[in-house]
Amino acid sequence: MLNIAVKAARRAGAIINRAAQDIDALTVSTKRHNDFVTEVDQAAEQAVIRILMNAFPDHAILAEESGAHGKSDYVWIIDPLDGTTNFIHGFPQYCVSIGLRHKGTVTQAVIYDPGRNELYTATRGHGAYLNDRRMRVSKRTRLDDSLIGTGFPFRSGQHMDEYAAVLRKVMEQTAGVRRAGAAALDLAYVAAGRLDGFWEMGLSPWDMAAGSLLIQEAGGLVSDFEGDGNYLQCGNIVSGTPKVFAPLLQIVAAHLPK
Image (tube, rainbow, N blue to C red; front, side, top):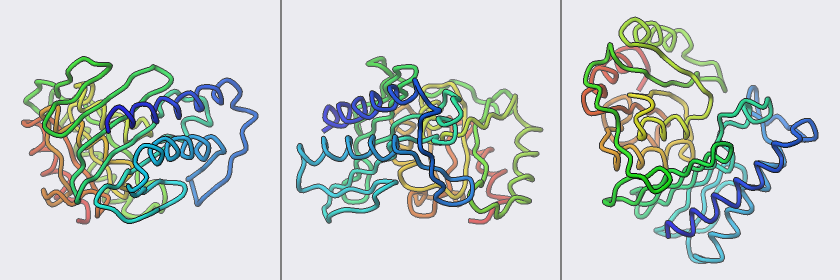
């Protein structure tokens, strides 16, 4: 299953890379405030779905652009281009994200950064890898030494005051905060040890499914804002190294709605 997902992610990445050569020619539509879609998102998603369905015709699909298709214990959760706003501005921080959920548990993960040709993969119980090299979360144990990623609640603008309070606390108690604009890739960076933690609210399952498994298989921790495992359902996620996770969760949980 993982090999098929990798094939699908690379096919989508090829579509994205071709389009990146002439971004000004793209047709961009607005789904809602600060949320965009291009024909590249749609073409990449269809390429992913076509490859997955050819291999696994009985599986179900949950995809960002086309929604849910079919009913099965196996559900492929797809974001064909996470970071569309970055992509249409030529900001090189975006990726393809594919996760497989089996009976409610994510079991396979692929995140592909086509611009850097970086392939992040994981199978539950078998570790996480970056371009075939085993990944581990960073060894940092102190929040004040840590580099933390986040994303703004950009779609609705709700909870901005609470979010700003968390941001201020995290900035005061860490080595730095980064907001790169592609949650799936941020989660992959936690798994790879490039970030020591990450939090965001208001995400969709396709933003988190693959990245959450990468982190777990790389030795990190992931939860919702209550410290439970319902992040795919509620859209709120905190992650980090085993030692950074708890103090980061404490700050987030003290200010943001559950």
